Length: 161
Image 1 (cartoon, rainbow, N blue to C red):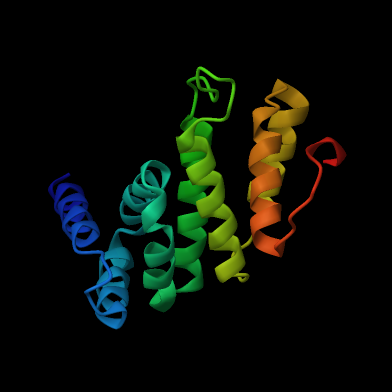
Image 2 (image 1 turned 90 degrees about the vertical axis):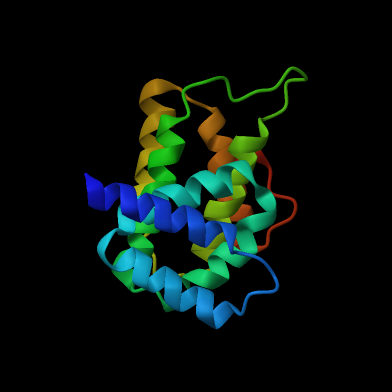
């Protein structure tokens, strides 16, 4: 339990130092060291930050450059976990998707685009099963955004998915 708290504190400190002024190579090495023994804790915290703040996506993704494939798969799992935890309403007062849902979908699309070696099968299976079984059609928006971001499509129609 103490090691989990230390890892959580370390990743919060690392996230606080994530900015343009810090050299990216140094941040990449620090993230690799943090995620080596605590990948799930590390990427759970990073995904929470990505869900809440859209201006951190690019620097977070670049910082993942030295991470192994297994660690990157853990990052994708963490994104999927955060997506499944979103039980509150996915719409704001105007009927648009919430900022947290759009941020998470954009982050996932950029993650899969930057690191194509990440296995997308669990993500696609989860989305398809949830749409089919539970009729959670807001997840079609997530799939739409991820595919649009990954492949650079601009005019994909959500009705065709």
